[in-house]
Image (cartoon, rainbow over all chains, first blue to last red; front, side, top):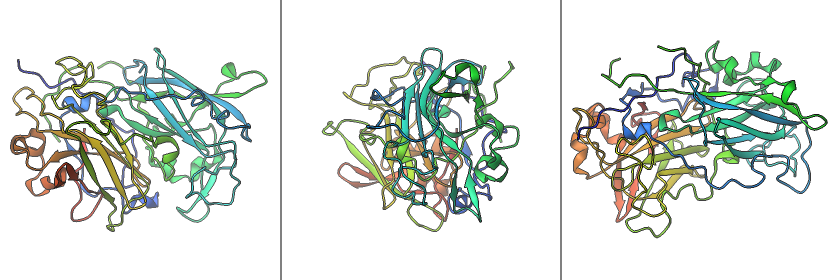
Length: 236
Length: 191
């Protein structure tokens, strides 16, 4: 039996930052200088890890991972993981990590003089349900300075890691909060093309706010969907 | 073409990725002591030849029979023939820039259409501070006869092909360094 090339995932267009975005200094010695070689998607690319690993009881609630509660504004972050055809991505692992309310990461290499919070580690993991929905509880992270240029500050953000269902769908990104005045000055946010970067900004949602408990932000994530027809020829 | 939802852009993992992405047993694609296990390790370098100590390497591969436990394998999803085989590995680079996984050699993959069979390989994603999107490459294995006819290797300029081939450095050990830039810049792929 001859197997055909699988139906490929669509190539992203006008979405991702260029690797050599010079406003972000660390790209200088790290962005590859040669163009990537476009190759057809074969079986290794249209499959991918479906594992979710062990999910701990408080992995979805970053405010309950220690003896006491962390300092900060308690929030829920929820939304859907979809592909570009609008299909939900069920049963997929979503990993998150973030700074504490003062803008400091519980990481040995983060040593800017903001307080650590003994009740906040800043890492979480959840699995989407059958409708592709995820939800976790945390505190709103703070902004923080970094060494990219004089007086550089990162807008508050939560890092997200997604697998989807195929190697080609893998995505690591950052979720931002609405109307952050630092957007205008942040090269990482601005590295994504205008018209696309706004998709990384969550929306405040009164409807899902939990009365006398937590404010709510909503954010949907869209991964590559599949072409309707099989792959034909590689062309540049 | 039907209406498409716009995609979410990629962003860098930043320097503190371990807080969210470090798995205690992430490097074990197979459990320790698995018959036929191999270790693949290497160093990730920047354009100045300096090891990258805040990176992450992920791998994805077929089992030794060349099958995937995944519904989009057109031959059907099968349980891997190696107990505990996950297909997926994840290794944060250490303070010397080294990454390492424990796995078994994947099988060759069947020919698609008019292509030749694919030689045993792993798909690789590299993430790091300074990379605004992951970069993708493949690991092939030195000495595999199928390398000469592999359709992906054939699409890579001959003088750069060696950057995709892991060197055998021990009985069950392979070395695969990743150079993000420089004379030995690894071939990266758009998939």
